[in-house]
Image (tube, rainbow, N blue to C red; front, side):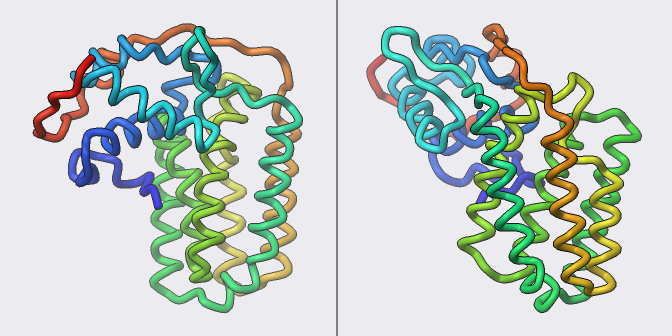
Length: 246
């Protein structure tokens, strides 16, 4: 499962494809890459110093999880989820996350509470510092780590994937200043977790998702092609030999 708190050079322990895949996912989640942004193979290949063949493989993987849309003869762009899909993503999350609250409470220990408190504290600081990138990442981490407490790996992985699509929906339809979830909602959810009140926790989570959907503005949106070389200049690539043909 992707770790939104640990996406750095040390995290990329696999191959170049994984490295590029995680870098692009992180940029999409943090709204550095926005829905509609074009993803030309040549520009990405230059930014990551790899072949277009490798970029093509990564874009196909991203398309498989619906973060990227591939169009014949038109290339790739970050997926723009329509209004129906965006609502469905949050409806699905609402069903899954609320239904799992009794298991979350049943398995919650002091170490879990400490970890959740740390995420909420860091999220608050990110909002105070107007660090939108960190706020979005920590907002996703809160939901994923909350579900992970239950020990249900399949559900947690599903929620993790849905947070990616939620981030796309917020980037596509949210207000320019919208940085994921409302921080005080997470504070309230943490308080209810401490009280081990599963029904109240589920009810609060349901209202939390309703508020997010109500804040979205379903209008058309399209983005330009970013400067990938600048965007990914600080990311060190793994030192491997790449002899693929262009």
